[in-house]
Image (cartoon, rainbow, N blue to C red; front, side, top):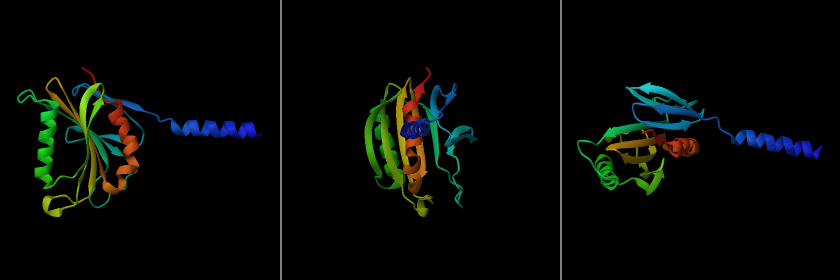
Length: 175
């Protein structure tokens, strides 16, 4: 009887730890990644975004999300380090202060990248109606910058971070 109970417990834990992943490919953007069933794909303003399922939309209608933006740098080519410095400068200008809590070099899909964690504090005078926390990684290849961003209400950030990390860990360039 002990053996059956232990076997059942092991099978239950194994089943819980496996995620059913789906792959998303953007032929136009030239990238792919995997995501689990906590996220739903939606088209917004011509861009595909992934929103957390089950989020209760509040009066702000904000939902935690993941997205990838591809920027063409062919008119103004730059290194990853130059792009990183420009990003930090623009954040400082937009937010009026440095809200970066982590800044490091990483590898995404075999390509050197930068990873930032930062906050956007609620400041109605700047149009920020919510306290937000973001994880953003970016890489440059063939004069294109690929920005992968997870944005969540600060109170929800940790709740979805492990699931969001799947996007970052499985991101790959197709060309």
